[in-house]
Image (cartoon, rainbow, N blue to C red):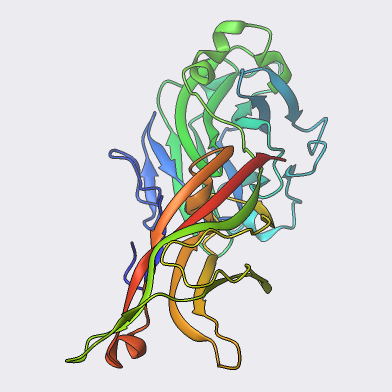
Length: 348
């Protein structure tokens, strides 16, 4: 639980051996850079030193079964959703550093959910040239305001293409795995002709983005009481009512009278699509309601939407304790009780 009383349930951490997304990195072959979940799109900027001829930047797009879905190259400058596309020559991302040649924009927010691998390739199309004639091939990845990492291949340049690396998806999380795999192929489409060219891709397992719809209801509670901690403090049962609020929505349960262990007849609330990266908070306020009196606040449960998605599709019973605010605690009130949320997650 975080210090502010919000239950997050699940928080991804950067695995050991992976580059810290907060720091600029110079990658070596077969290293992994994990993108911050706030990164919405990146530019993959290719550079090279090749005297007398040019190279071509390209991308091949795969699903979790390593089946090729599409290509982005000079003959097809963007994929069907335009989530992976060439940046124009006058785009500053493609020319802000000496040696920049071509750039691809990858919009993580718009990449189709079934895409798990985006292979980045540099090709030598000129018939009389090969990678042996190239001094270096580099890749610089930027999120716009700043560079995130660079990767350069200066040795082992052979064949007619260099597989530079793969953008890899695992659900809502993206990473980049640097590669150093020379192959014989003049275009990105020719890379597919030889199955052995995909050994690097085949070694990397990704998972598609699972889109989930979240439904939530307060089902029951235990030991719901209101009491004070004065010398002659009292403990009493109450008439609890639950109020669920999130993103401008507000829903009330029915009122259960004189019960420490209320059971609520509350219809599940449709909270729409829930993403693992969603940091918004659902609040469940508990009140004692008595006719003719102002509602008495008994406590609150807070839960992060993204944390709930970690449970996966299905119906889940989640028990959480009520907590109070600092002001309420200072007034001498003691809050007790545990609330059961019914969490329904279904595939969209």
